[in-house]
Image (cartoon, rainbow, N blue to C red; front, side):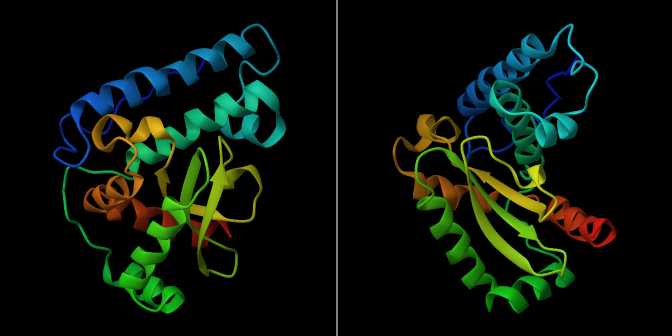
Length: 198
């Protein structure tokens, strides 16, 4: 059965940009609920022993939705860090500037995509098999790992439960706060891994 993975930091580690209360609800209630619902759907079935990735790539409906949300949230928590204000490494910065023009242009494009991602979903920095970086939006529980087209490097959760406690309906302020707590070390690990996987 699937477990709620531990957060990679304390619940106050993202303050003042993301509050303890948000972590308690977003991680402790929403993420946990997806885990519990998934386990309830697959218990005593052939899917019980399958990985999240297998379920995401082969199932639909409730099993897909909950498996994808468990995976997406775990990936999201790892995209964040208490080390506020990190910057991409030289290698990653060069790739970003090559594909987006400049780091500021990347931030602007990513922020615009996240702010305008209609309804609930996720905004991703991904890498294709030709090693080019892209920004994509997915809706609801959808995730780039569903199809072997893009390797995810970074994600921003734009479901309202990710930010409503802290910034109410001001998604753009949440996105600005998000950029202060990005774990660029994790993004670079994904960037390097995607070379191997492609």
